[in-house]
Length: 127
Image (cartoon, rainbow, N blue to C red):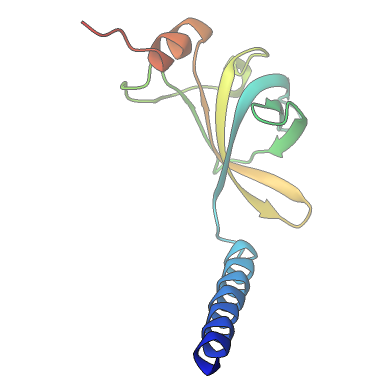
């Protein structure tokens, strides 16, 4: 009986420490998150990228600044190359690495790929 109670206490303690640690980690400002979807809109003047998230299909806005890396990848195994903000086009698949700052999402890296090459990379041909 005592061992069952001790096991429950130990399990609850481990669970609580994991939740507290996870919450503390998620709240750190240097924690980089990722999201992906399709570009829904680009406001180059205000540096705002809107994407439609792949999972939720909801729009999400990201801001960018002079430190943000804008990249293009031709296919999954190619190297990314720098692009200009005006090359971010609605309908293109995109992956965004970002940090939450205050109530905004600040993009650290924005990587676009073309529809045809993204689809080809998603389904590699087997010989």
